[in-house]
Length: 376
Image (spheres, rainbow, N blue to C red):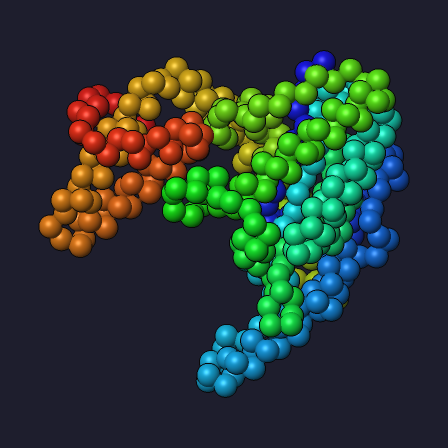
């Protein structure tokens, strides 16, 4: 059977969700009967384990930075190790690994899928540790968990990137990858959001994950024909049910994290009101995602029906705004045109993927005519 083996990276994960460090009985998406089948890197509280790693490895460098800030008369820039652990730029990165979607996993069977995932994860860790060891020990696994109690069996890994700095370890993904010798995907172009060394590493790691899954599935005599080509389209071109399912899953993870905060806040009444407001907001967002499924299907069909028209519209508007920015007589006009270019690039990426967005740069030649009667 055909299926995908996926690798997703972000900094929006939750240690509490991964370690099930909250009251799982109030989480509707968790199967209590299968909860005991989960595997964890430690029986300790995940957040405490990760914070302890930060304290042991990064507190020395942080103390030096804080001392410098005080000497420069900028004590407001000083941070605690807890703030570093929770900061968007220095918090742990989370990776989700999964073999097949819900349909594929049902055909393979729950136990076989758990076994396949377990063995593949061990080999993936071996590769990751070997790669890090040969690249200045820049990558460190903090915690991991295999969840078998949700709709699909999947893996959560939380890790941190660092590098040597004046005898200390300093957190820094970009610098760590640069020192590891990784090249930009497009060396001839400036480094940026869509051209950085993390993209190079993610591609390498994805290919390795696919190789491992293929090898182990074949050894276990599991019928799995992996689709190796990445998804061509962006978010708007996911299958409708898959997109909605991912949105609900993301909101439910936020609920898990907030539930843990509620349990903590029960002993801290002054914080309880704010946490309850956050929880109510998350519940409302989950409901909005569920209610918005029909609207999304209509939007998706409209996008598919007018794909070429929309592409031509984006190209035309991009080129015209580029010329406005180039020929602007005032800073205000120039800034408006630049903002419009940024919005069009984001729209192109969301709707049709990075390749189409990147191709917009090729339009900086003769301007096309503005599309007539077309609106988004």
